[in-house]
Image (cartoon, rainbow, N blue to C red; front, side):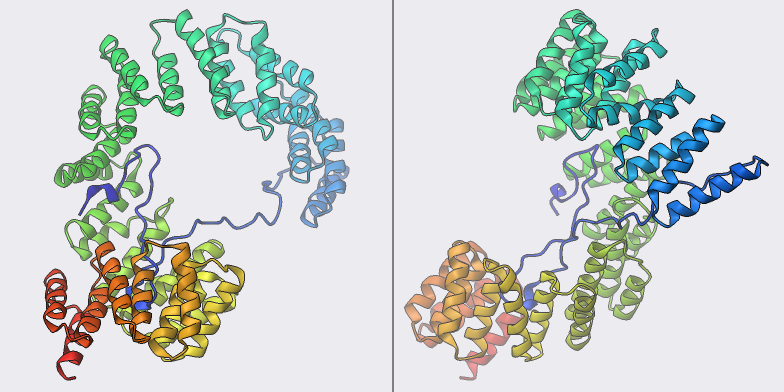
Length: 583
């Protein structure tokens, strides 16, 4: 298996998803790709319960009024009471609570009043400063926002570099990126030669998409601090974003030669080599980093992933097993990829299930559990696979959809189409008019000879997505293959072909329709184009049948034998020749 199916970017972990091509017949469908996970909406303000130890009855009563009002969604009353408590008692917790609730409720005026009180009661609290700065920016009060940030810098005059980076991070989280950038530029205006200020400006400009400003600022930093590593890394990052990867690599390569003992610099260089797909060089650099600072989890993970990318599977596994055993981070991530290696490289489902079972959290958690169910089904343990899927509690509609699709596909692969139909129908009760569920149910309905249901489901998709080539092709092919409604079939397949003129599935459908219409020469032309585009067994079976009916039995057997050699035991090929031999 090609190692490129795993990871090409190292720091950001990209899950290897189950993908499958949509076809005109359900027999060639694969497990549906995983949808984006949509978090469940927040039902109430994310505030922890407040604990009050005061014995004053009036204070306890006012807190109780505020808490009950908040739970009931009466935010105005809750904010008013929290603010009064903050002012009267000087309790910073009440001011913070009022500010957070007002921000949550989009009560900007009250939020700013509460945030200013919060800052006055806790001068050194960076989160309070962030909230009040954000509110000033939201209100267009950039001078006030700047003043707040000047006070942040004044809190740590001896650590200006961290202070400016803290501000860059704070401003980078604002919705109005341009206003946030203006505030930073105001801060920089009085410090034109301060490398810490310019570095922070460059980082913020990158977040705001202002690459010219970012590059000019970092060039000045490099001039002011020619031997410092961090500005060079930032400069290389900007060059890469501007499509100048070769310049970025040359820059960091030179820097690494000048600073060979700087592990952070070498790591940045290695990551850039990965981005440039120079995996051999990247692996060598990560190995040097691992010698300099042995056992760093992110470096071991990178070593494992790059080695797998180079198909040095045993070496990659050693790094990932070392990482998993160290239990210092990346535990579930390494377990997931060890499971993929066991499943796809070693074809060892039991080992894969063992590794996947360790993935109980993180972005790959759902995929790992789905893979466990798929592997159980492949072993013939379909009921166990279904039971395993039922233990998973979906987080939101996207994950629920994923589970319905996987369970239905497992049943289809096992030939249990009636049960698959029930699963997809249950999914549609929970997620009405979902296109993936409608398409999947349509494919099962066709297998069960419920052509009316199949047609209804595909037409429901096309009512909302008239250019859905998969639905057009599936409907057109089925009408051509299972009915005599050839005019209807032609309309659907022609439209699909306009949308995907090079799709071997659509070309195959058109070829099969031409055969059903008795236009054998046209059928052969379309089917040969389809087979050239993809050596698909079903296409080969169609072409074999057309050639045989035309009297070219030698040509038919030649196509059939070549396809069977490539896919021994294929049911489409065996069935078509058995049918033709008995004609």
